[in-house]
Length: 438
Image 1 (cartoon, one colour):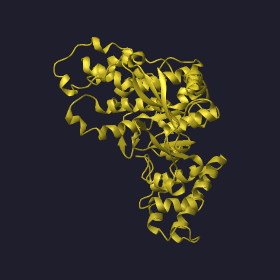
Image 2: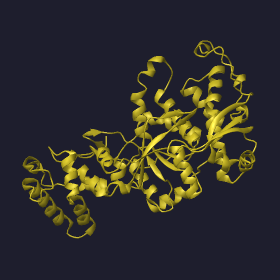
Image 3: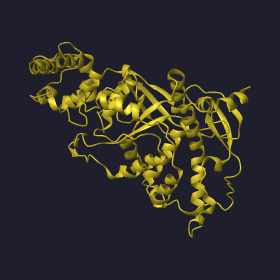
Image 4: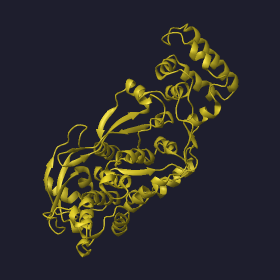
């Protein structure tokens, strides 16, 4: 999926920066006065969950990929980021790697409903695939700050900042979402496009027999930069592309400048007469992105921190996860408490309201660890005050109780504790935070 060998070449240029999402959001608060706004490539996430949850399905339960996505969203809430969920749309290319790819996918329906129930923001399900969000990240005003995806094509399409998700970990009672941060300065876009054209990507196989090492050698020799210059000139482009193709072919046959690591007559012989194909070039150079008007409308209308409808979400979990009855209602309350508390702190900070009283007290704190975790505080709260659903009134269903520990004494009316990024508390309850700090 994506351009062959792209991530390997990017890592040769830069190792990237490994950092926790909560740390990035804290940095964004310091620099821009608001949390990190993140475009999440949902299709890539769900594709991974489809395979990762195959073993778990034998243990029972419903909609494992969607449930995993549900937990992922709660972790994003705890990190204090503002995500935009991006789905594949009707104008994405219909064929990738010689396979028809449906423009709409049934396995995104449930996760879309989950995201809508959580109401973390307005989800983007427009006409495009992940490429259309590139325009968002490149705006000076910035609708989003970064793109979270495992599809390296985002860099080739012009993404300014791409976050490559890594496996989540647990650090002292808090779920850490590590990512590797890559910026457009790490490797030139024209080199990545040339890599796709020569070695192959989603839309074309490239030149038969040409691998990524030879493609990047050609890029270092300046062929990508020269290709972009010809296209951007806007005059006599077909003639210039033909001359460029002949020049590259001659260099493959002779290696006269000794920059391709040897002679590659076989690759030169396999170069098509219409290389590079105009339609393939257009897919990379002129992706279908949102217009300036669409971006302006989205930026002015998007609700970053709307209230979450707990009852709708509870109903969704019951229907789609089979979380029914007393015990699963209790689980629902337990799972959602900390994320909802973090979410409410974020919402109040964005609205400029002091949410003092939303939790009982701050009883501890710990310093930041560079790249691994932000400054954190431990909050004490009453679960019922956060979630509010009356799960004790739900029936005890036959067959459901055996899945739970009989000694589980979780009580929504008794204090619970959770670690939370300090910047959420500092902005959401400034009076309570300063009182504890002093």
